[in-house]
Length: 421
Image (cartoon, rainbow, N blue to C red; front, side, top):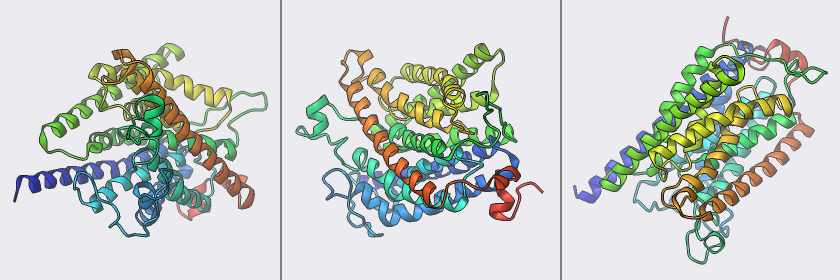
């Protein structure tokens, strides 16, 4: 075996191992969402997390992979592949099948974020429908712009981004491409769906509807944290050679530092704001730090990662409170804030904290401008597509279950079984 063959083998194993870690995030989301919601809807929550992966894997392999990584659409969208993978040739000579598996995990992650914000009142059949459109079209289109060679990240000198900003939009592992997209869809769906019965009073005050198991939620966060070590370092798509070894070690460190900084920041902020440290907020704070660092984990210093975590963790409680108490948008798990707000925030902070192009390191505002323009385009597309999708569904078959089903629980009525007998 040649040195090159050995190098490709090592990189392939690392990519597939990282894919396994990202796949393990699915039970993390399932436990987290189930824990933050009521016991009468646990089967429904768990089932949705399986359905996301079942539908997403099928459609992304058959069509979405071509939409995202194909060509022929003038930088807006690739051509559908209909299960044929021969069109794609990885620049690192990695097996196309392995790369498809890795990218499938990211597609499924983006889709599953939506289920938490729309939990406890959405028809299961309808959930399957909009999961199809997310995996089939919404995610692959903006993924093509950024990771598939599309116009937003085209680094050729005469490309739009280079002409306009002198640099390209940077999202290493998906603060924008995966998380802000999921968070934007979650917020859009929650607005059209409306709050759970009993959530808001006529006088405008808000009733807390606590979840049934912070134990399950905590376990979910630990699993997600663990899976993120595949999500971010795995996006290097290689472990051989000095460059790759340094890169994955660096992203491991920055990912972890942002998570712990955000957890500490949210804990202290909630302690000062509410007089007691909130465990549930701290759990979401850790996720906020992980989401925030994902865009720039390769470009920021360890100190910069710690600061990004502090900022995201501090913003999170205020974001959750504003969306819930001021806007009266019912998001049972805080997905709109964790993935939407902190995904946008983390994407923008690359323009400040990037060692190679950030404003805090004397490189001007070009990168910040590219980041702001990129996130505006990505989430603008996501919001518009999601708005059309949810409105059409709501005005045809309806998004929401009947009041009696919601009050007595979706598990029995939608699935004929209960998680806790």
